[in-house]
Image (cartoon, rainbow, N blue to C red; front, side):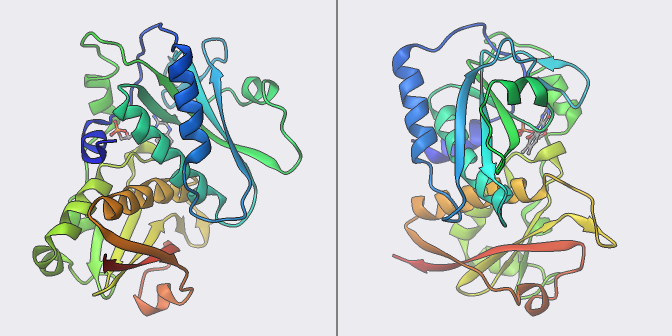
Length: 277
Ligand SMILES: Cc1cc2nc3c(=O)[nH]c(=O)nc-3n(C[C@H](O)[C@H](O)[C@H](O)COP(=O)(O)O)c2cc1C
């Protein structure tokens, strides 16, 4: 896969050609679904590729239905970290599909009953989201153009997302010295997020990066997608590090919120030790 091309060209596709995939394409997609790397071991997941035209799929935040020939349904065990884990896994597939010329749109809104009916869910399994999948509608069209912009597709600046050593300390100087990290961060800023809220913040140190999401106010959850968004963002970060020959190993440091003086509106997700190969 040409990773940077895939990240730069991926947009949410909300209008599709009415075209079925051939058998080879279906097999290749199923292979990608079964080989994507998890963020955490020990959380059972399954990603199902379904024909979607009759599923009453997704809604544009309640405005209109998205009709796509297929969809991926994400099913996971409800264990600590399941949202960022499933976001991390699915975004690897989204980028692979983009590289194959296939369009996608992450969907938090969908017809839950219909989708549940077509899957045999056990008591411990939950559906987190679906992803519309199909060949993008070729001609210029409102949904994939103007409408996307109206929904909000602009991106924050790197210095609004990243800090150095402490929350609030500008990472501008660090990023000027670390050209590769600047590039990697830019690739993460292009990651999709629910409602384009872009809730992830990172704190760099000389040899690590820690990821946080803004998801609560006065102790109540304000953004139910935030951890999914974090998994998506972290998958971009991880894949770009691999692409740049940076050794990126994940670890948990539960003192990160205090250590980096991160405000109470944020939750800590995970950290990565960074070193050149
Ligand atoms: C977890 C998640 C849920 C989303 N849910 C919806 C949705 O229900 N309807 C929709 O039209 N787009 C949905 N999106 C797509 C976002 O609106 C889109 O990623 C964001 O506006 C940025 O635009 P882009 O993906 O075209 O770059 C979702 C994205 C994510 C990551």
